[in-house]
Image 1 (cartoon, rainbow, N blue to C red):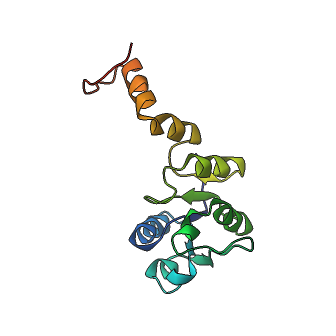
Image 2: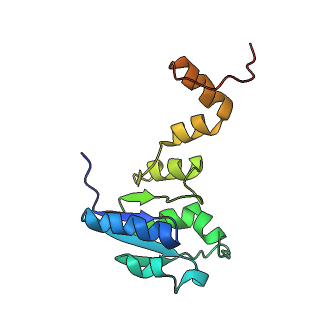
Length: 143
């Protein structure tokens, strides 16, 4: 299998703290990211390394910082991160983020970009389930 030695959690707070705890238990170095407003938050100090989310091109809002895909990818690349765990919310179901990780050779801990795209469309997801003989709740179907 694949051995990960350094993992970034692209999230904050309790979610990130739990990811870091699991990483520590597996012997994986953890990397936190934080917005300026979150500089004193616990998740930053629970990781082995932490980096401020900042961009030379634009000002990042407290929440927008955690949605800035290119800044997160840049931090990961500059710090030899091998895998990114998106946590919950923010970028966890973002096809573009998963695809950018794949393009940069970073393991995205979650569904592939293709599956995020396929299952993000509820109609297509239902069709895939039916084609694979997975029971679905009866509902409106177009012929």
